[in-house]
Image (tube, rainbow over all chains, first blue to last red; front, side):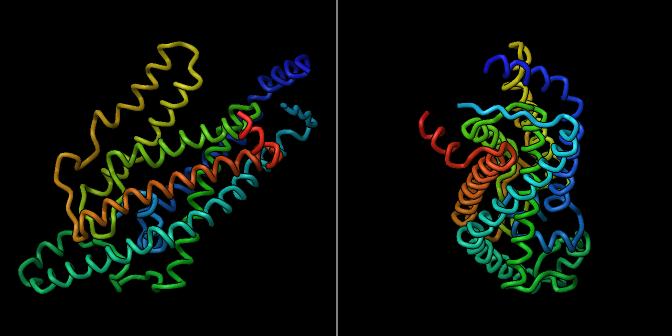
Length: 61
Length: 263
């Protein structure tokens, strides 16, 4: 079992390059959504997300 | 007991992207709905009350509109829900639906960031460890930015918006860097610089921290809002991190929960 784990660990290291692309995309998309809903300086978005912005202590007004 | 699963390497890249996005969406959707229920029961009554205070002070100041006409024109975007000049959702169901949407998008954003962290980490994350990751998320995105810029009720006046947004984002980013260095830094120097990264924005100080905060609502109402919004954030991060572990790691919910209890 430990042998299997070691193989899996080694494989994980090699796969870092493969994992990094989806991870970076996830970070990009997550940041985009967060900035959009919490920080965008658009009156439309601000008014729609107003109460949620207050709830999440995003700077508002 | 740890279960090691071996996947087909050829499809790994594709499935990881799909797994990351789908589990982020699902974990965020569930957590966002939970946050919305808490928002309606705990936070919305305080926001509604604050808006009554705000309107009272607005109507007071509009009586002196001739006097501070200049003041009003110098800051034209005291943009607010009740402005009437621009679109805003109608009070009631419509407004709640937009709040629900905003909470779901926020929770999806946080879930995606958390799961992207899991993906970089690359190893299995147990429920207990996942909750630790969630705790770091709560501290980085809710507690530590809130330390300098506590949650505000509508109508509260603070420093310049751009300055506060910049400080908020910088604090969140440096906190994540700090926690990552403390958790994964191999050398003591790296861990120590993690502590520095955590402390730096607070040593620098939040914009407007040295000036008195003011607002039309009572201090008691504002204090209650800060406490309750932190509570809601904490519940949100517990939901996001546990859902992310269950969905992204494909942990069996019951096994994960019982192994958590068994510790």
